[in-house]
Image (cartoon, rainbow, N blue to C red; front, side):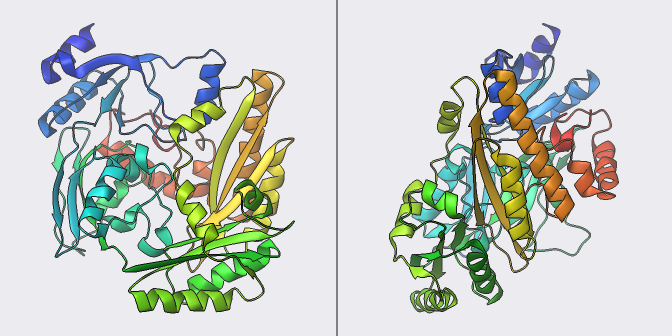
Length: 455
């Protein structure tokens, strides 16, 4: 009662509720299905910077952990406050302050819905170019905190490429405003520390984003390759040619069938779209076609199909798929150089397949490599059996990634899902992270599940 009374003095009684808080980590959903419900915690909804600062100062003085909360659409268990902790609901910070059509800058608050922001930009002929499949359920602050990447990253980059500056309240209540300019060499870009910090260093209030003009023309096509390596070689050739496709996604044979593409056995579908000024988009589409020699042209039907289904993996669908007793499913997104991807694909699929389903597509391509996005599902005879199979799949995928020199996460983050392995990937950089964490948050106030736990 003491905590509630003190917080009511800061935000008022109407801005406090008590309820369970949990993101969409499949293992958490499975635990709840098996009878281990998330505990009720105090959820506080501040409406201004001063309230955020006062809450953090109160929490530090009372040894209470605070987890900032956006859309709760994360999938790694980073948002999972325990009894006695509080969640800070950032939904009141939902204003779009400015869309500057001359300088191509957008200033908004962290609680703005990602899809709503994109729609506002589209009305002005602009785009952020950030399209994770979870976009309708995201907030800008959540995208920043998980170091998100979207379906159009091969053209526009990931969230770290879009953020010019951040407005942040540090754990001691200090406010740090966005620094000026499209870029600055006045010291390190320290705001980048908060991209991927999972709410572990402070509370993001607002953001300055670079935006883009919508392309005049978009041309999307599909190609069926006889085997995976040929498709990966085509992706590499496209990305290393100087073309920056709007979308480029290669589905392995099983995922091609699962996604409903009309293919023969063993064929792998590449969906690729070029965009920009009409003549540029057409010219680049022609060059992609040349690089797809040896593949079967499928026309624009695969592109149209992908567009219709790009947001299908919603929170509601995920929960529905995990409703049956003993069911398990998840996605694991790794990234590696082009030379490593074929072996990574075969070994991870063997590790996660078990007696269930294992799929993979390749997206978020760079000149140097690509993200391999694995999906797996199955069932166990009991809840304990399902959990054991699920955990074995993760252990196999993570150990394989570390063995081959792939990153253990491309864009979903760490949370609890990757807590065991994050230090193995970061190596000596873990000391840097801990030093930053201890320097900014000596009382351990901020999210205890950030970056594998720090409290």
